[in-house]
Length: 348
Image (tube, rainbow, N blue to C red; front, side, top):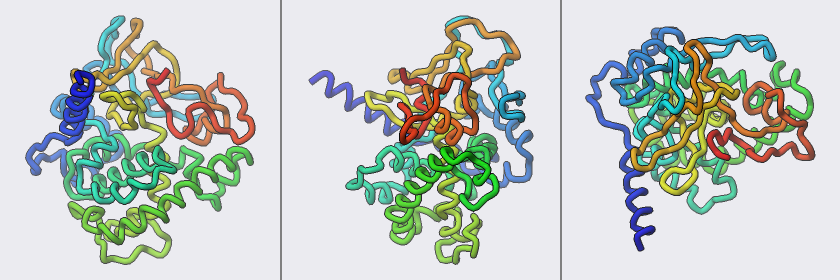
């Protein structure tokens, strides 16, 4: 009885915390117009200065770019601004600042989610897709409590860097080796089936939820090429846009036990940790209702903050993240790895 009561209390706390705080809708950082005029660097700088006001405690974490010789380009990542001591908490992110399936459940998208209640064949993909729909809407609407993160951090992740999101008729896709193309095609086929079976019908049945906050016009026609449009809901939530955003979500998400159940969620700041091993660990603290990132050993100022995502075979790593870790093994058979679909960062 006590364990059942604890689980119920945890679930109540989870649902409550999944609802973002409700600051004044006039707060400048909540307005889309506050972010759009600025370039990526300016948006990032504004976002990092805003963290304490948002309730995120990451005082020694900054953002920089790092050269990766293996892929021949610079990547944005997290950096230690000051020395970090052994066992020091590096970042504490309250649940209210995370974007999860429960964020969607506690929004006007709830009726859309109920449409999928009886379809559990792709439950993991659907949860990631629901988060993607939520991010698309919150990023397009005039004002949102998630505007700062979406416009200053998430939108800076170029889907073109994730091979599985590339259009099959693009030169970049054709340049991929056949086995990576096959992995990408399987992902896109699953997303297309989900879009046809659930997302497109939901657009017709619940247009107000998709258009909330001026995100789009449900009565406007989609553009001929399906590109995202500020006026057409059909374009904003097109198969191409959903595929791109879903790919970014799966490249940035965390999968950890939260109040007794493993869940997918996006964690601002901590989702900028690139792949590697520097002695960082994570967990969700049920008592504090917060995501915790801490150091197992001292980290020098100026060091890139890295995290080991998990074990992926080569083709899947390249398809999902755009790079291949040196320790990755060749894919076998269907090229499905132990941790298919997302990082599962933090899991054993």
